[in-house]
Amino acid sequence: MNVSISLSRRTFLHGLGTSMALPLLDAMTPVRSLAYGAAQDPVRMAFLFVPNGMHMPDWTPSQEGFHYDLPKILKTMAPVKRDITVLTGLTNDKGRGNGDGPGDHARSAGVFLTGVQPLKSQGSEIRAGISVDQEAAKAIGNQTRFASLELGIEKGRQSGKCDSGYACSYSNNISWRNATTPMTKETNPRLVFERLFGNENDAEQTESALRRKRFQNSILDFVLEDAKRLSHKIGNKDRAKLDEYLTAVREIELRLEMAEKESKERPDYLAEFDKPKGIPSSYEEHIRLMGDMMILAFQTDVTRIATFMLANEGSNKSYRFIGVNEGHHSLSHHQNDPVKLRKISNINEFHARQVAYILQRLKSIPEGDGSLLDNCMIIYGAGISDGNRHNNENLPIIMAGRAGGAITPGRHIRYHFETPMSNLYLSMLDQLGVHRERFGDSTGRLPRLLFS
Image (cartoon, rainbow, N blue to C red; front, top):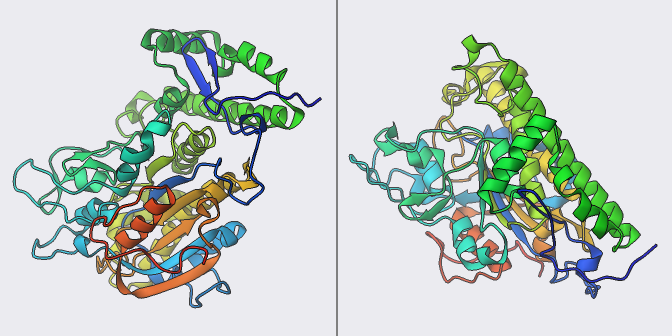
């Protein structure tokens, strides 16, 4: 049975301490344009960051244009090859010393989304620049429940010095509200979940959490009546979409509960060396949980802007689960040792596989005349090219998605040497309707990216 009803895009399912936004339903857009990438579908923007550079020979395609082969690190992205654009030749000049001496790791993260040279200070003063995600959030963040979402895997210190006199804030953040205020990322999946689905009543949220814990309730139990009422009003296609969405939320909730159970069962003597409560013991599961919640946030339009640090810059995490026992940062100083280079490539491939998972999930969610990924601009990459040289030119960068039909993906584009990374950001802001003359150290828009 198809029921004719018109719903607001801001329809929520409500319950005790709960406010659950819904995905885009047909009932929310009764008159849709037949054109691909209709205006009703908002464009989302996300930046996924990894530290310590890449093994560039295993990252960079040899051919340009549409007919290129995925190199070793990127082969895991074969299912979304037509949805990604490999960008070669982009540079963050302000990540170089430029007279400030050592500190390449801190600079590379501080400049990654700002295009501004971070201040190297002997005191506690920090200064970078507003990041592109926050430039967008200032302009369009009032259109969604949350202006932006900042996610990460490693917490990291926000005070003190971490890299050759640079404040830890630079290495541990890529999002900056303004020149002196980093946007601290959230690393605990449970806290992200509660933020996405809680209402603004603190007392109700506390009561909801207590009841769920005491009676083993799902958050869905608190919105069940609202969901049933809505289900009777919408058509079959929307009902199926609603069921799929609620199932996805429940699956994430079960994974969170599993992580919390694992952390509770860890021996006390491991507590100080292990993950905090609620954070999965598996690094892969941690990344995927956070990625799935970013996807839910985009799907329900509670935010259109996100950043996600898969690890902090300079991270020396080991990857024993893929057979790499040495620390990532230590290995990145490989001095062309073939054994170390192979291990670095394996770490890079692991990260790419997690990003591929996120992109495939985005692609699997229908929206409008395409998929959720079609209405995204997802940047994945690092602020350093080769970890041994600490160089900031020819950065490893991928863009995924079509920005609602504006971007032509499925290509490898090689830009002129020293093309500013900020040119890419200026072009991305345009696709959100945020038009600026300059951003960071930009010199213009990035050519060849858009449909001509």
